Amino acid sequence: MAKPFSHLQDLDYSVVQQCMHCGLCLPSCPTYDATKLERNSPRGRIALMRAIADGQLEATKTFGEEMYFCLGCLACTSACPAGVDYARLFENARAEVESSGALATPQRTAIRGITLGWLFTDLNRLKLVGLALRLWQRLGLQAAVRATGLTRLLPARLRELEAMTPAVCDAWTEDLVPPVTRAVGERRFRVAMLAGCAQDLLFSDVNRDTVEVLAHNGCEVVTPSDQHCCGSLHAHNGEVGLAAEQARRNIDQFPPEQYDAIISNAGGCGSHLRHYTHLLAKDPAYRDRARLWDSRVRDIHEWLVQTGIRPPIPASPGGRDRTVTYHESCHLCHGQKVSAQPRKLLRAIPGLKLVELPEATWCCGSAGVYNLTQPAMSAELLRRKVAHIAGTGAEIVATGNPGCLLQVVNGCREAGLTVRVVHPVSLLAEAYRGA
Image (cartoon, rainbow, N blue to C red; front, top):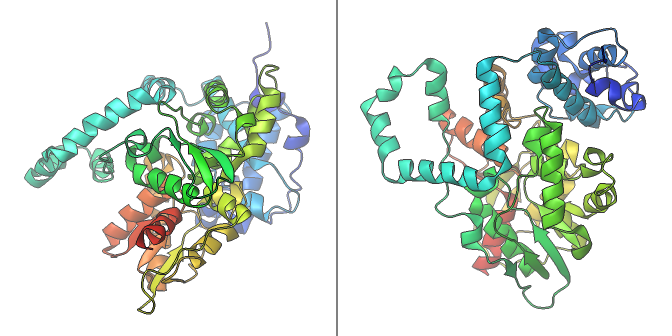
């Protein structure tokens, strides 16, 4: 009988054995901080992964549950002195869980098939769902159902999920920006702009603001319609094959040799977009283009600081500065190592005073779909984050990832905290318009 394929055993063993078991990652791990259990730490999880790679352990239900209890926030990678590539280990471990069927149930398989296999492999389908939800909200049906108390008839978990339903934008990105936006003044660069999935449905205004800011900074911006998912949702949930297919589609739609940069404004997407080389390493038709692609991907904050931010002109001298604090998207700061640049962007905006957020790099609990799959731990992390936000006294919370935006908005609303939650690039766009 042929030996079953193992993602962890197929992984380059040098990646598996990097961990020195020093434990310096433990204080940075939110789940270990909450439980103080070794298996809930990066070191403990890597030990389990290595046991599977060594053929000493099989992917059991317990292993699967542990891999999905991990936030994948990558805070451990910033703390690690040995440079352990936890992102690759994490993705291969979840792929191991899925290929082994350790957590498989008919309901789970159906949900994954509908979402990962159908909905997020064609964003036109996602937009149809978004359109239906938009009509549900704009026609007042959602408000009416809530007002009548019918939601109380739902099971507790469904009531929680219904309360978290985000507001769908009035227009998609393709309705707000043309396929090609000319640079304001002299053209310095030609860049591509990725619209994203959640970003397009829920924060298309952020995409519009990003294009405007790029144009103001000398970029011709290409933003085609009918874009594709970056594949991060698939890769982070064990569907490596689907993630690779999305990577090929993006490379074909945005040939990296044609652009000075490929811009992402979502921390989680950007972190994944930088790793197409590993994803397509065994594909001779794409591996060289994937390497070039990775070298072209830039986060919007990173690109603006790298090329030089055009300072906005103060709209009106004097007046009271608004206070803003900055929450760091995990995959932006730990995955992409982009941390100082958003602060530089915020400090470049007239009329803003930046107040540092305690534990700014600590996960808010969003973590992709973690707030849906692990609601208790997610809620605990969110309460901790909101308490720190309240302590700053800031009027504005800036953060560079759609999942974080939604999570912080919901947390502040539940806590009765009145603050504006916004992407940093939107504040810069407003400053340009004000001038």
